[in-house]
Every structure is written in C-alpha cells, then in structure tokens.
Length: 116
Image (cartoon, rainbow, N blue to C red; front, side):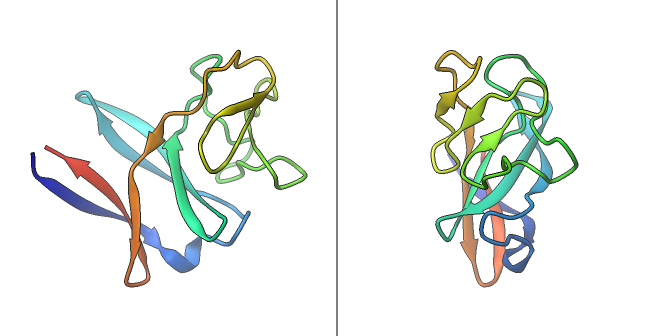
C-alpha cells in the first residue's frame, strides 16, 4: 500500500492550544471533514465528528478547545476529548472517542498521510 502526503497547512498556522485548521479527506470513498490542532508541541488530527452524535465539534470555525484550553469540546452538547488521543474524558460520548487522522509535521508544514 503506497503512502502519499497531502499538504494541510503551514506549521506556523497551528499555535499551541490555539485555533485548529479544518480540512477535508476521503474516508471510504466519502468526503469527511477533519481538523488539526497543536497539543504538546505536535499536530493532532481527528475527524470533525463527535463520538456521541455525528455533528462537527467546533463552536466557531477552527475553535475546538474548551475555555480552559485543556480539552477538545463538542459545541453541541459539551462532550470533552483529550487532545493527544481523542479519548472521551467527559460528557455524553459514553466512551466513544474521536477518530484520529494520521498527520506529520516536516519542513515547516503539516501533511495528511493518505494510503491507497
């Protein structure tokens, strides 16, 4: 299986615990919304879909962190997710976390890792 990389954004676009960058990817032949944020110095990417109900998380475009900047939060019902893993840490997600998306940071850019 061949791996390709697709540019998402410049690394400088992701401030630690700051705004995220939304992007689209192909998931089983269907376009899906995803996002990337910077947490603990690394880009972390997930499908932009709550584990509880299939709604997007950001409460304003690119705003994924809660007011404390410790967790990712679903704008619809307040479910909280750990930004390193996407694991549900509180709310109505009932243990269903976010689906991670493979990304890499290199040469000042963040890339989506795609497989054929």
